[in-house]
Length: 278
Image (cartoon, rainbow, N blue to C red; front, side):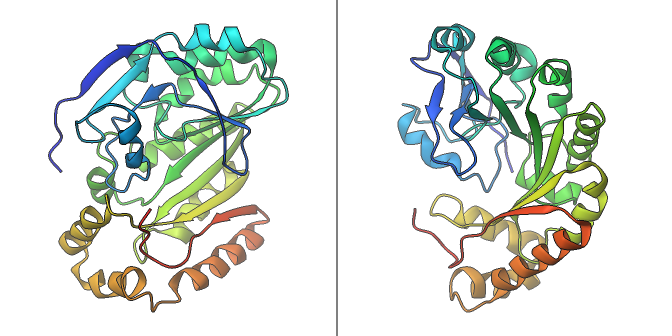
């Protein structure tokens, strides 16, 4: 994957807190518009139409430099579930410089909401000192594969899967609640059992989401499969084009059984039916 130079812009945002449609969050906070992680499979690419950007998704990031001031103006957070990063990674590479996420977290401490971080970056460990000041803080990392070569192709500007898991272990050792989000799960590629076995000792629970194809990522994903696992191409077509496979139904039962074996709760977000036009 050829990566273009990042277009970085500092902006004054109108708001920082968005009411959530997700089942486990009251609100979401996206400290940035856009995401430099440049994941091939990214589902948030549809958000580009709301940004005013003409550049490709993954090549631009708008930094909400007034985010902390917006947090202080609102103040309606007590007892609320707040998820960081529904349409961006709150710990993507630019966070190392701007520290917007860290500033928001520090501003939220007096209100004590329930905090959830989902990231692909080991940078999250920088903020363990802040996260420990919340009565209820959870950190999750998403993993699609342990294969470093595949990960570099699929999510080129992120921490390696191994570094993510090491970061999660440090979060757990610091007393934070933790989880591993196997997402997106690539059929016949994602090492489901191995990921769960490796992380079981420091993950409080597991979440699962299957790979979904949409118009903006379909070709990129099929190109990836054809290049790296050409023998799987026909199986992917059965799942996503012909919709003749029972793969996800069987996988759902499999992950339930593994979680039961480990005594862990599962949260499964599978959308059966293959290719989505949305």
